[in-house]
Length: 298
Image 1: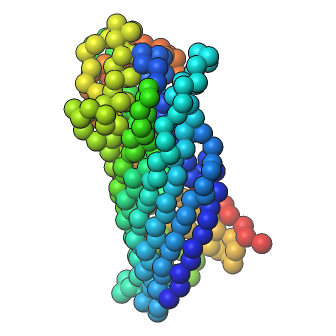
Image 2: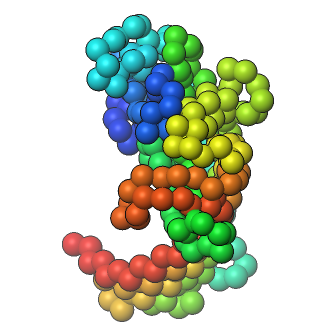
Image 3: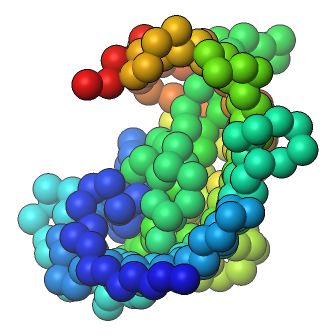
């Protein structure tokens, strides 16, 4: 058994952003990242037991959310800022070795819950504003195409308000099988959900997000929308590796990812991500990735 206690500088890698919605109706309808720097490091603890059958561990993290000022959009007004808000993450993981499918085969799994510490969940969620934005075709009349948007910050806030923390939960797992000493394959998957709370609760993160988003769309003459920023992401992948000699591996990896979002209607977007400005219909999105890799270890 072992235990660790660490103090980690929360660089951009460990900060998913604190979105400022202080200027309603602006073009930046999904918030402006307004993280105010670091005053306290992340506090991380881990307990682990390792035996012949595998290992199990439980880890926790505390993350201090410190923001900039309420108004920081070059309007000349810096009128205070929200109090710091502590977020946290709890994760459990297990590895099972030498399962009956073959020598050296393993199963790995983990589950995680975060509140105000989004970065400790699946990393793909935790970019700043616009964590997921993808486009596809659509049959909706008058729309250029379809769009899916998922934003996963640590917290949101607006004019003279406190921070509202974002919750996430999810898990990931994988099964690795060794066909022989030279070939192995893995099947893996992951799921994560992002919760802003109820859109009908005054002061919730969802109501803060939607007040700004709907105001910006109204300013563009678009009112036929239903706003709900809660969303989830699922992922399934398969990888095969060939190791002809020691320390040289060739691999082929295919991954399917799915965004399940809750926005409805047609949104007016500016020119971004290589897409023209215009009307887009909200819809769930799929992405497919293929990766071929050669790795030489020295």
